[in-house]
Image 1 (spheres, rainbow, N blue to C red):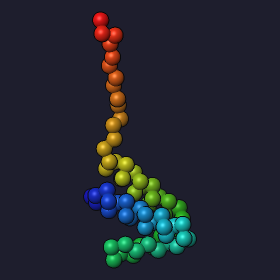
Image 2 (cartoon, one colour; image 1 turned 45 degrees about the vertical axis):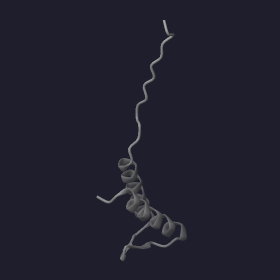
Image 3 (spheres, rainbow, N blue to C red; image 1 turned 90 degrees about the horizontal axis):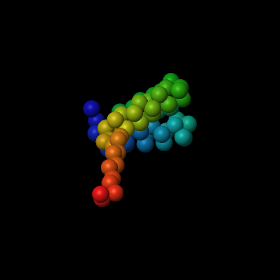
Image 4 (cartoon, rainbow, N blue to C red; image 1 turned 180 degrees about the vertical axis):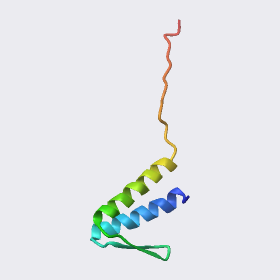
Length: 69
């Protein structure tokens, strides 16, 4: 599995190509051509999901207090 920096670079390249209206993306000497915008959107969603899963987030915060009695 790629690290977060690599996933972010792939996502940025894919988003830039999508915004330009280009369906071919080049990164790391590889070329990928997507058949449709929907396919690009699915790839972006997958990359975002992998990035979110790779970063550690605090999901529960517990607060405890007392009145000092």
